[in-house]
Amino acid sequence: MFKGLTKEEKSWIWYDWANAAYTMTVMSAIMGVYFAHSARLVGMENHTAYWGFANTIATLVAGILAPILGTISGYHGKKKMLFNFFAFLAILATAGLAFVPEEWWWLLLVVFVFSSIGFSGAIKIYDAFLVDVSEDSKMDRVSTTAFGWGYFGGGLAFIICIVPVVLIEMGHLDWSLVTAYRLAFMVTAVWWLVFSLPIFKNVKQKYGTEVEPGYIRQSFVTVWTTLRDMMRDKRLIYFLLAFFLYSDGVSSIIRMSVIFGEDIGIDVMTLMLVLLAVQFVAFPCAILYGKMAAKWGAKTTIYIGIFTYIVICMIALLMNPERDIEFLTMLFWILAILVGTAQGGIQALSRSYFSKIIPKEKSNEYFGIYNVVGRFASIIGTTLFGLVAVWTGQDHLGIAVIALLFIIAAILFKFVPDDRTFNKE
Image (cartoon, rainbow, N blue to C red; front, side, top):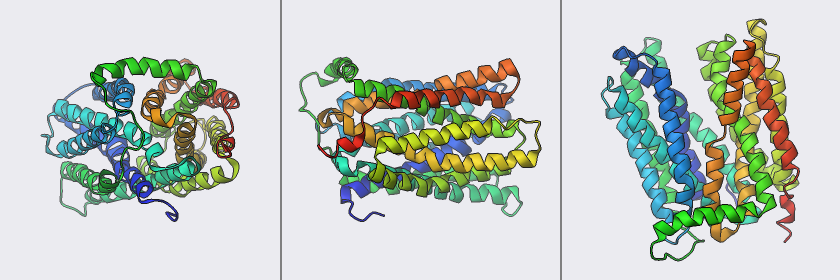
């Protein structure tokens, strides 16, 4: 699987394995449950709203920082420095969650927001490092391999962290759940740090510009210059519009899937098993997408991913809560498997396709904009999903809006060039 890859490419790939422990264990599972427990201890009402506010703040800060970080990291010597800063901020904040007194819900949110900002800042620069570690002809393979191993690593870390929780719930371990949650935070932080060592040691900045006087002030000017240059490139305009829409659809499905499952009557244990199954299905399928891209091109393979999500939405429209629960559970498992086949591949190939159509020497600035687009994805889908659900009283009908996002994205994506022509140049 790693045959033919350089030490730098392998080191870059390992970071996806490293940080996936955070996304799967902390963001997706443990943190929300632990915060709810902390809020209940003090009789706090509307804790779900505060959880939502914290995530919104983290998203907004990360979105605002992305283009600025992109321009600053474009200077020689700054990219690795910024990556290290945000990665260590995230790792230390994740470990710090284990030491916050359980009734201090407000401090839990503050520390979580810092961990989320650190995670997002490091990921933004990590994505931009792809052009420094790999060449165009290998980017699809490297990117999809990283996503695939990320899913596997995230799933494995999740199993390790969730075992004490399950044993406590079953009465086989005489610990408190709080102890298990705190252990999960520490395990995640250590996992993240250990598997980040290769990128800390081996990945270096290759492309960039020389540092100039007042470069921080100049970075704000560069953001507007980058936007102006991007707006002149029709390939980038069509790609970013399509990317925003199908990423919005993908993110909306990720964010709404658990709540949607609960609403139609899927039990919690099944939801947890489905969440884990998606990780391990996504592992080989993300790598398979890389092989498909090598044969048919990234553009065609991304189309396959978009079509898969349209099928997912069509199936979800059949999931009326009034249907038999066994039938609904079967459909939910089918949806989960389909999501696993496409989720990692479409995101990985989007990253590598974008890397091919941007100027290498400006990759950091361009990826700053790319990450803003990706960061704010799911705004349209989740909002319209909620509105349709309220208006109709049928949650599953909100899926129709998400299907429309994928259809419009597919139309726009028709106007981006075939990446196979790049490899011939």
